[in-house]
Amino acid sequence: MTKTALITGASSGFGRAAAKKFIDAGWQVIATGRRAERLQALRDALGDALHPAVFDIRDEAAMRAALDALPERFRGIDLLVNNAGLAQGTKPAQDALLSDWKTMIDTNVTALVTLTHALLPTLIERKGAIVNVSSTAATYPYAGGNAYGGSKAFVSQFSLGLRADLHGTGVRVTALEPGMAETEFTLVRTHGDQAASDTLYKGAEPMTAGDIADTIFWIATLPPHLNINRLEMMPTRQSFAGFQVYRGT
Image (cartoon, rainbow, N blue to C red):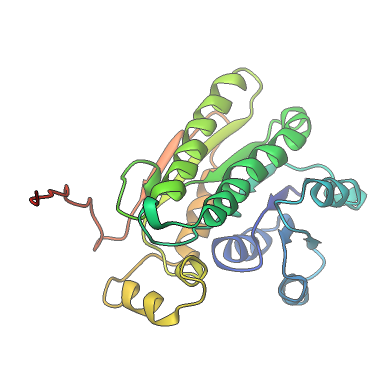
């Protein structure tokens, strides 16, 4: 039986790579995102095993309409990959834009729980799986991380809570917590500053979108009696930051 995955944020980065990985392995994929032209290009490249669902993940009405409009063959969702997320801004809290904070919370938290809640009946019926893409920022704070780190801490803790609540249903839940990976993430965070993105990743040998897609696929295709609760990943050249010490008066 062909399995179906719904992958959010599939127009670029982790989500796009994951869509290709799963389809190459014989799955069907519902690929969601805001950028219709990118999703159509992905559909053209991967064929009719991919169903593009174009909507802003923060728009609950559009999300529900897209789910209601799924073709019959895509309705039996076996895997939810909550990948859509973003960081906005790098300034300390006292200088950060409240609008950036709200965008992160609306995307990383509110949209994620809304979609998860909507799909839980299907996932329980099919004894499916949920992979929530969190971040090492959920565990390790850093200057400028403020609301982004808080939102990803929510994702990781929500995943553990889901796992506890879904005990006995057969549904598996994983919080995947990647560190530095080179995608459009920093471009989005810096509102399009390519130089900042290039500087961050230069010489770091960061993880790639393909690395994360491979990991998501591995988690999703483990035997059904195995659950990965949390999985933290970093490139070899990244490790834990030192503590800050302020020596002023």
